[in-house]
Image (cartoon, rainbow, N blue to C red; front, side, top):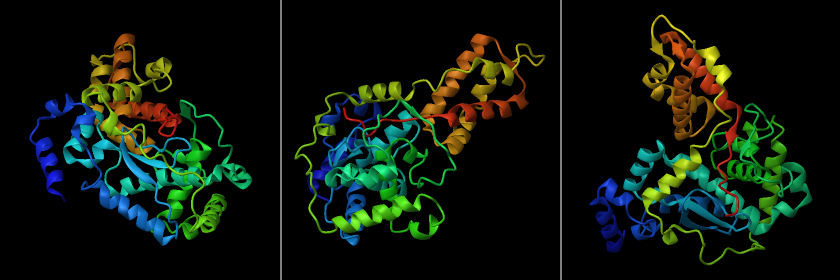
Length: 340
């Protein structure tokens, strides 16, 4: 690690969280070189080399995981380059999207799938469209999924392959690339094996060949150009991720709780007492972000007060079932790959 890099880390470590939050993102002077991300990106490139794919998508620091539509470059959340920033991310959003390393590699392989799709223009091929669907299909604010479908691989949480044909290919590629996936055996009896075999054929065809499309020299969305403060960044992020899940389901709340109760325990108080437990359990079963579920619990707390609902301690089981049903029916598309 260079002396300059060490100096930058010392300066960041000497500040309080509040001081860091008031800094502009561009002034944090963040770099991939010398960070914890560097060896993971190098691992991705080695995996590509082992498959004789010599095109290595450029990686840069962005505000989220993304591969801009039809631009073969990989954006990685800037907070992943420094432990202090990861701690702030967890404090503000309750989790760090890209930790631990195993999950980070899943994201990198996924975004790499997008990059190769754009670089070699696979999406224009007839067979690609037959297997994955039309690339031109619009992204929606939410998507419905079949959690036990065997027509899709499983890489990222949330059945993300079912969000869009482009995501389906990226997830398929990620599984194909992963050295430990054993996809030939794991998926041999699944209909999705056709997609995996097709991806395998595609990668063999482009082995050693140059891409049709090349990345831009300077990504226009890089963190080095973000003029907003870190606090403003989180204000926007929390606003977007805290949007409604399909309404408050008043009728369901009334079935879960009662209008009157001898115990005098308000439903809102019961939810507050078990909020963290509910968040942890529901995110486990639905693959939602913790922040989303936390926001949903808060909204149900407010709505229960508005409706004047009461509960007993045993009603926490009904509350957990209700939250799981609401969150499990629909997963919001975070629009990581939509053009800006």
